[in-house]
Image (tube, rainbow, N blue to C red; front, top):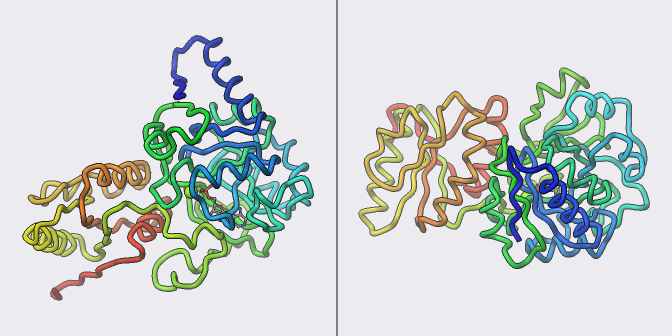
Length: 354
Ligand code: AMP
Ligand code: MG
């Protein structure tokens, strides 16, 4: 049920796998496949019964709409009411890529795909396997992250297997994903357009092309008790099994605090995981310490986050303490996911206060 696609593979073999996967999707089945963001669980977006299977396999709440993936710009007209000039500029600049845009939906898109909404989320991914599969599957593939609802999104085929083995028809293994956090979601039905989920395409990148862009205020930090505008963002998503706490502040104080908490929990008989950076990893002497990457390399941090959360699940730790990461660029998306995984549990340390 897992089919591998790799560099240097026979062309005919690769084509056969893609064709078989495409036929499964056209026949109303489910195929997990790699995209540049995370692994997606694909089904025919225009077939309501197929979309329903996605919700069942993932255990996903039915009001959480699916993103429709397309492979070329010609496909967009059929599923949307209209595409504004601004949206075309954004598509020109960032498609194919990690950007999802929300439009008014056309009548052919079943409500079962959009969670009952009159809007539809559309993305054109860049990953070669994803693009081939979308075409082979009929051109409109609904593909949420291929994890069990509530668990960290899958960044490798093995993660998909852990969560969905036996519940779906095929997993296409194309190796590790590039980015590691889900796409930026940009609502084009409001003016100015609004970011509903931060991702690799940042507000600054968007504003450079289409002018002012708003950000859903519920995304990061303090105001996060209000209901987010993307239905899926309200769920405690991305969560490891252990209780995760983010420790924020001046880095040497953060390390001290995490060391203190780790020692305390271990003393009480618990298993503790620590998410450290290359600069600090040597400073932690107790607990199950994992390095997420160099502090200034936000892309590396994004790429490792979900995999590390999953490793802690297998290690069966009870508590996880993580350093906070800077919130510039894709770091914004990382902090958004980390804070959600933590259920917004954060300890702020400041100089001279313990
Ligand atoms: P996933 O594909 O699992 O990363 O989840 C898709 C995300 O897109 C969820 O957070 C959804 O709530 C969001 N989404 C999909 N369609 C819409 C829509 N029409 N309006 C707002 N958010 C949407
Ligand atoms: Mg998801």
